Length: 217
Ligand code: GRF
Image (cartoon, rainbow, N blue to C red):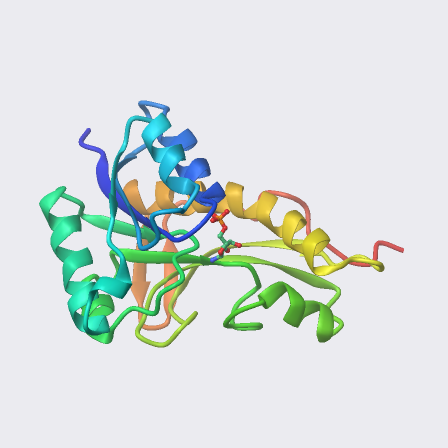
């Protein structure tokens, strides 16, 4: 079976990219990582891709007059590499509506909160400030509005007394590394469909881990 040719856009450390690369090592995984693009030449994720033998490209947003021309360069590079699908993994640029609409339902993002709560930057700090007892992470289809779009997979983690932003972020990140490869697998297996604001997943079997309740007692 042909694997879904996937491009990954990053700006930083790329631990979610690593989770996708690791999953795609398995020949039975239905997607392959074809190209990694970073808008920053110093993104540590670039080395992760090179180590995995995946092509990389730096497209520096500062070299473009506006968002539209930057996004056009992304689009051209993705298509030239044959990518049919795109994952945002810590990509810190807002994309134009032209780009997100032309990749509609072929473009996903991971966010470190249970959307629709805590959109935007510093989602973990927002959860702490709000006194949330449970937070988590979300993989969703990208729409023109930031951190909006049909939700594919979510993972919950407890917020513990004494957590600081780093502790909560680390606990969430571990779950990110599980749900991002899962979401891409479900999509590449053809099990995901979008109906309006909602995602349907064929053959989904329950919730995996037991329900997460926080505090436990
Ligand atoms: C993750 O927390 C992700 O949810 C957010 O940016 C961070 C990227 O981390 N969008 P990494 O570069 O994958 O390590």
